[in-house]
Length: 419
Image 1 (cartoon, helix red, strand yellow):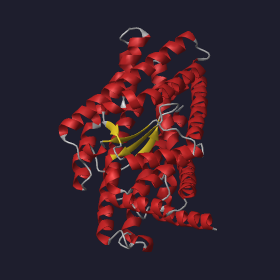
Image 2 (image 1 turned 45 degrees about the horizontal axis):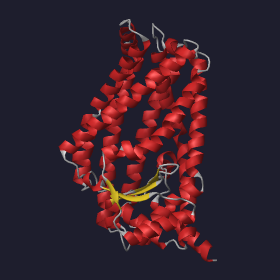
Image 3 (image 1 turned 60 degrees about the horizontal axis):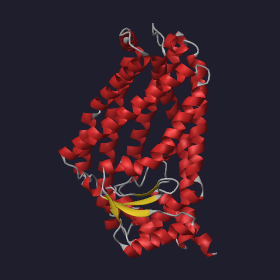
Image 4 (image 1 turned 135 degrees about the vertical axis):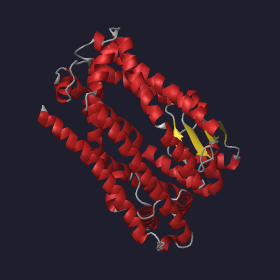
């Protein structure tokens, strides 16, 4: 057992060391070549913007390192000292039914995590984002968002815990597949109700209000077989000046959502190019592929948990005196978080590949690449995106190709289309 513990500790430390090295390499790389504007962007991005981007990246990276180290230290203390064993024994010692025990077990941990994150969230929002002109929130809105998010997370976690306890009680052998079915149905249900129940709690969604653009957007999506029920504008500017647009919902509740900040920064043709990219994800079945991959992976993980939970190997490795379902779940989640880091390059690669496919489709749909290129440049400039991410950092973390690489590919797609 001691050997397993040592291996897990090594993986835990290695994950954080590698992540810090990647952050340092990325910052150093941009500092080295950052002041030089790429030729393809020289007309729209100046040196002062690059310097501001470097400052933003550096501050966000240092903050991210500190935040991650803080949580790693807490997790290490909780998992690898007697603290988890004491916590587990204390909850079990309450001698209450499984449902109440499970609710208390996870509610305390969830609450502590969310409270501990308050200072970090405040600093990120009201110092970093404020310093670079992105934050639009006041403290009352932040508090309101926190309370709503806290209640929603607590409700979902409580429901999930109660469901798992009930399922494991009625089917000790097949709980893993029944639990998988439950969470699959829950996720689909949330896709249906979120646009009408959860999202309006945070933002106001109103009709786009630009008739010509709305007609063009709906016509664009009809070309790829998407019947969008509504094209809406969301008041994202009351929180942040970052911009976005997305396609949400399934079945008959498909909706196109455009940030009001995006409407201010991009022209109609550029907005159409961004949405054409999103339509490309749907047409290329990226969304359904992602769902299928995730669900199959989740099913496999639950089966592994079923096999492991039949033994006391996890409590043994971490020296837990009183074995039980809840502590096994905590330890399984911990190990899963370690392994997910080392899988991130594969996930990032698949995502970047799909983004390029969606870009190619957008160029084909629009008949040219210029508007998508100009929209990406504007968004990158406004969001102070890193123009020079280190290739190794991209390999690990980037879900989208870096801007300069993406622009080159779009030009190639455009030339291929014109042949």
